[in-house]
Length: 170
Image (spheres, rainbow, N blue to C red):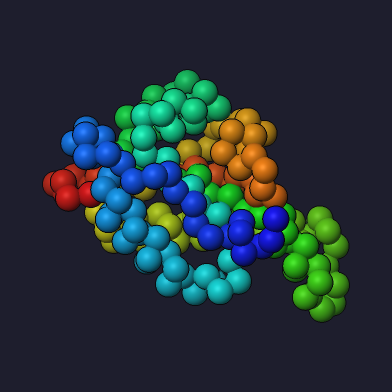
């Protein structure tokens, strides 16, 4: 798998009209969020892979890897963004850095950069009418196997997305 195949943002298929009526965000709202995230100052050298989970089927797959409390919160959210990073990005850092980085340092740098992009996602989410809340208690290996199987990506953290109070257009 090439870096270009892993780095593009990932999202599930567009929610059905019925799912949108039940509180899932519209595809337009997620597309707008994606467009804003691409304006991130580090987007040109960005390791983050973002997967939006908005369907009931996706949430069911997701919550089994979360703590019971976070599982309930994610189930009740409009969507959840899984922010991950690609190990291939860390490998490219090793090739491009001077002085040379250790493998461990390159992986830590990729994870930190993806986390910073996740913060940018949370800020951009507020711009398009979402409240964003990080989710911290999860099974990393389980999420990687469930959502990033067959790639070199792993999860850094999750961000729960809910409509802002009074904003019902997302």
